[in-house]
Image 1 (cartoon, rainbow, N blue to C red):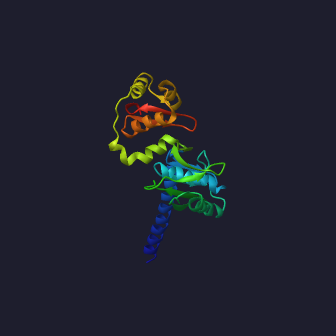
Image 2 (image 1 turned 120 degrees about the horizontal axis):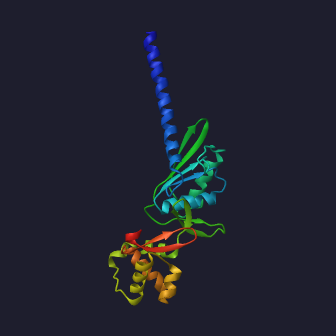
Image 3 (image 1 turned 30 degrees about the vertical axis):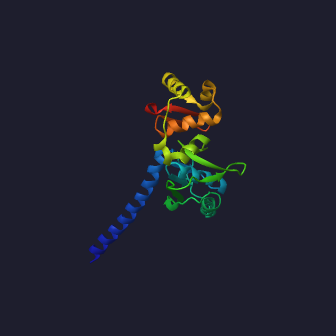
Amino acid sequence: MKFLCKIFYDLHIFTIFAHYMKKVGHIQKLIAEGEHQMLDFKFEVSDSKKIARSLVAFANTDGGRLLIGVKDNGAISGIRSEEEKHMIQTAAQMYCRPEVEYTAKEWNINGKTVLEVIIPKSKHHKHQAPDHNNIYKVYVRVKDENIVANSILIKVWKHEKDKNNIRITFTDEEMLLLRYLNENGKISFEDFMDISHLNKKSAERILVNFILIGMVKMEMTDKKIFFIPTDLA
């Protein structure tokens, strides 16, 4: 009987250990990936408006995860207080327009709590969050950064459902754009306006149409936006 009890006890300890290692393995695997378009580390949550920008950026792009209590270098610091959880909830409900849905899981790693916030890609409206001046803007996730969506991207979203009705007539300006891209590989919006002598509205319309029919893609950073042929993207 004692022998059986010892076996059951050992199995129980092993199960607990295996469960713990599974938890540790999940978080360590995510940390090993480093920050990227679908993963961001946060040492702490101290500003609901700031975290709202991350929530909407993930929701507006491909979805993703926030690991709260993890430093930029991947070191686990743990969340500092329960208030951080409430600030995320406040960010999603009060400072995301419309509200961003998310789920949260707590992981205890060596006595420190890491909060995993999972944000699915939004299927509906594009979400907005306040910038540093409290002006609501649409944010997207590009690589490991949250950036403001430009007017061309917003128009692409707006007309996505109508892209099958787009007809390219290959005007002089459109042919000029294609030749430039063939020779140089990419072009900025300002350069396209300059070489085509088009106003902003007309230049945007051409680029939006080219993106919608799949001839051109946007290459975005927080400082510059380029348009490149799809076969080079």
